[in-house]
Image (cartoon, rainbow, N blue to C red):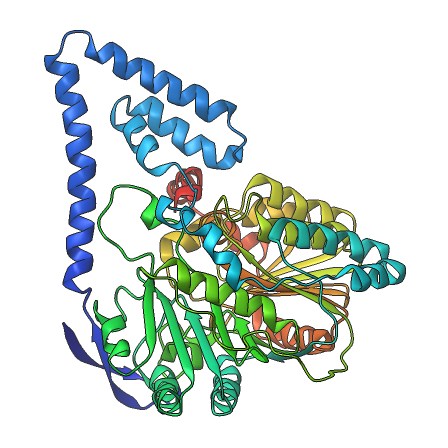
Length: 522
């Protein structure tokens, strides 16, 4: 189900672009979910009305839900909207809570966790950790915590290359794909048919004929409006192993959460890419949607790629009926690579894969150690009180904290939520900028020329709480000066938000306050 529209490309010319309506199976799944919710709530309401004293059971259940909510270890910011739901909607509220509150991994995924061990790379990083501890004890404490909570390792001698635009990352990806000899792992939240994807698919088809194993994993909801509903079968017919992540089936549970927001490309276990770039034409500015699209990417070469390989292999295996074989030599012996610094590629996601919020912990640790500056680029700013206080404390210590957000938003409601945090942060001397040319989608964190993190993690609840994410924590790596230069150039193109710009009417202030209550659920 598609149609062709006329759009403007980066050179100001009109081009034909084929877009997809939402495939029928997604519509059916959404309707099934809605029907299930209404049916379950309707049955309980009917029982309360027709069965004597059943309403007492319903109210006791609602009370039990409130007690469980209040006593849980979850973030208070996440609990508040659910408490409101349960109290304002006595029956529907607790039913929605029982169906959607859980952020744990789906049961079908949990059953396969023990089998995924065959895909994991085990590295002893004791020697590297001791060397880092001697060099910088503070950095070593960050590394120890991250490796522990994300079940990953500290790496040295991994070359890092930073790409300040999706266009540059696209060109580098094509160049490395041409070199593939053994396997290609490709995992992205969004894949859309167009120049970007078609240029990659052309190489993948040729590599399959050469005997290269190719595995593609894309998020089912992320690609709801960009790919046909049966696109995995289309790729399989070309010899490409493909699977949608957490296929939408219309279950009234948490399948709308825990989406796969990761962006990973691995070639032969030797070279890996990650960052904010999805495989769609707006990410390389072939199509203009919200002004100029600013994004970034990161290339790893060396042993640090092994963690990206592990993540991509496990995510693919979670979503197929039969466990696929481990690609031959997926953790190859690496040639000697001389590179400065230390890095930790890591994943984040729901329990029980990750007991703690990995991405949030990384950001907090970086902010807590900042002494001179902390620069952040993010498309969204919807954070809990912990992170808000962390940003404020850094600025109040005299750290130059700057956050760059879009000037042209992709979602007006989400942008309103982001703006609701401006005043509080600015009152603590946090400087907020908006990228004037358009939309900034980069997720970049840089502190004191010493620490950096590049990956898929936004400053919002979707990334920090609900989704599968990934990133690379770096300490004094060679690419840090390039990251700083790019952020400084982006600041030059951005508007500094002032207090005068925050003045607005009572109705808008009330709206922002209202949507902020429910921000953790968005």
